[in-house]
Length: 515
Ligand SMILES: NC(=O)C1=CN([C@@H]2O[C@H](COP(=O)(O)OP(=O)(O)OC[C@H]3O[C@@H](n4cnc5c(N)ncnc54)[C@H](OP(=O)(O)O)[C@@H]3O)[C@@H](O)[C@H]2O)[C@H](O)CC1
Ligand SMILES: [K+]
Image (cartoon, rainbow, N blue to C red; front, side, top):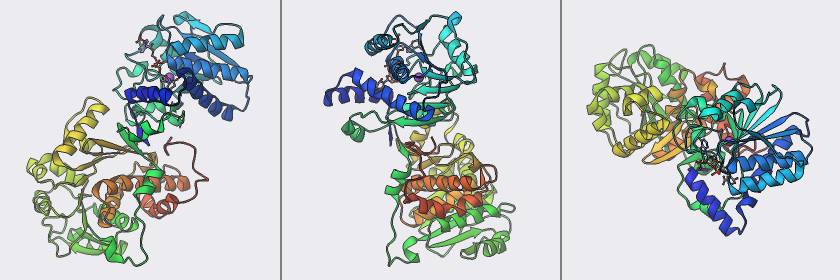
C-alpha cells in the first residue's frame, strides 16, 4: 500500500471527482458512510453518548455527515461545532444544513472554554476538528479543548488524522495534538502514523476505502510504501523441485566475541531458518564448541584469537556475509573489517558493532561496499548519520546517507523503515515483545540468509524485516509479549512462511497489519 502526502490526496480528490463525475459533497458522503458503518458495526445500537467535535473545514464536514447518519439510526449523538474561525468550507455548510433538517436544531456552537461540555468516561468522543488541512499549530482555546479532550477517559476516535497532527510534516507542539484511541483514516494512512514522535497519537488505525481514482493511486510515486502481507507475497521466491542446497547459497556469519557468542548462534540459526542452503559461522576460538553444539548444521571457522575476531580469512565462497553481531570493538577487529570491506563482490549485511566501528573509523566508512545492507537501531543510526531535529529530518538524512554510500539502511523501530536511495519502505509486522536481546542478531541472520538465496539487497531487507516481524507476531500470539526471547522469533520463522500463503480467515480488515 502506498502512503501519499496531503497534497497528493487533495490531487486524488480532484481527479476522482472529475473522472467519476461526482460532486465533492458525494465524496464526503462516502467518507461519512464508511465511518458510520465502522462505528455502527461495533456499537450495534448501544445508547452510549457520542460527542462529535467538528471543525469548520471538510474534516468537520465528515463529522457532520457521521452525526446525521448516527442520529438517523437512533444513536444518542451530540454534535459540536468548534468555531475556530468564521470561515466555513462549502461542504461543511451543506452538511450543517442537512443535519439541522434532521434534528430541527443547529449543532452546539463552541466559542471558548466556557462551552466545554462535561464528558462521561463511558462516552465516545469523535474528533473531526482538523484533518489534513491543518496549516498551523492549534492555539488558544482550541488547544485547550484538545487538552481537555485528552484528559477525558472517554474513548477517542479520530477522523482521518488526530487533530493537531500533520499528515507529513513534523510535530510542532505535542501539547496541541489529540491523543486518539483509534484513528479512521481515508484511503491510505499518512506518513506521520508510522514515525516514533507522532505515531503514539494515532494508536491503532484502519484505512477506509473511499473509492479514490485507482489510476492515480497506482501511477503516483508515493512518499513511502507500506509493506504488509500482499507485498510480502509478491517478494517471496518459490522453490523449484530440483533445487538443491547449493541453489540457496552459502551464508557466512562473522560474529561474536567472549561473552557474546550467543549473537553468532542466533544469526546462524536464523540464516538457516529463513532458508540458506549452508551457513558457516566465523567466530573467535571460544565460540567453536558452542556453535558446533548448538547449531550442528553449521560449519564453523575460528579466528586465531581466543576472545575476539582479529583477521577474517576463509577459503569458502560465501554467497552472502552478515557481520557485526556481538563483535566488540577491539582494534584488531577494526583492521579485520577493513580487509573484509575490500571483498566488494559479496553481498554484505552490516550490523551492531560493525556499524559502531564504522561510525568511529571514517576510513571504514569510505570502504563501505556499495549495495551493503546496514541494520542500525536508533542509537547506531545517530552515530552514523548524526543528530536529527525530528523524524522527518532523520529520514532526509538517512536518504542522503543511502544515496551517498549506495547502501540500504534498515532503521529498526516499532515500524522498521528501510531506506534505499530516496525511497522508504515501512514495515507493518512486529510488536513490543520483540524489544529483547538478540532480536537484531536474528534479523541480520534473516537478511543474510535471504541474500544468500539470491534475493537482492532491497528485497532481502524489506522481505526479511516483514518475516522477522511476522515470526515475532506469531510468537506473541502463543506466549504474550513479555516472555518472547529472540530464539522464539527464530523458531517461528517457519510459521511465518506458512502464514504467508495461509487463508485470510484470521486476518483483520486492517490495511496495515499492526493497526
Ligand atoms: N480524499 C480524502 O481523503 C477526503 C477527505 N475529506 C476530508 O477533508 C479533510 C480535509 O479538509 P480541509 O477542509 O482541507 O481541511 P480541514 O478540515 O483539516 O481544516 C481546514 C480548516 O481549518 C483551518 N485551520 C487549519 N489549521 C488551523 C489551526 N491551527 N487553527 C485554526 N484553524 C485552522 C483552515 O482555515 P484557514 O484559516 O487556514 O483558512 C481550514 O479552514 C480530510 O482530512 C478529510 O477529513 C473529505 O471529506 C472526503 C475526501
Ligand atoms: K481529526
